[in-house]
Amino acid sequence: MNRYINAKWWEPWPATQAAPLLCIPKKDGTLQTALDAWQHNDNTIKDVTPLLDQEVIHKDVTKARYRSKIDLTDAYKQVCIHVKDIPKMVFASLMGTF
Image 1 (spheres, rainbow, N blue to C red):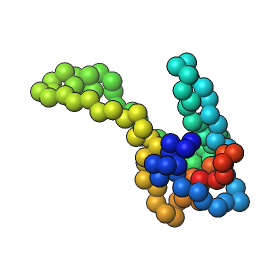
Image 2 (spheres, one colour):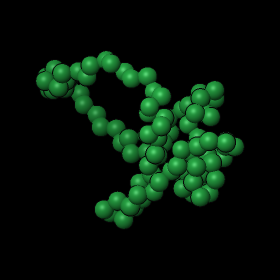
Image 3 (cartoon, rainbow, N blue to C red):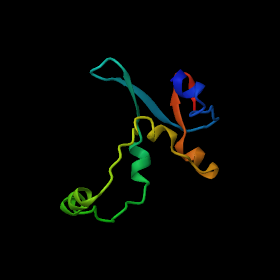
């Protein structure tokens, strides 16, 4: 958690309600942060857009002249949130609410 706080990815935020943050050990010994957002999911508007056909994606990739690989290991934790939506995304841990 200190890694994300020191990187300014997570900022302390006062809140009366927050989802619990869990740290789950991975096979390699590192911790994976997980947010228990089951109540948040109940209030979310579902996206009914169908996923693209995997065969079409595969054909497009094979036709591509150039390919690149992007490391998105920490990308999820760097998603920008609109200021008005911050109270909806607050989570609680032993170190406080963020």
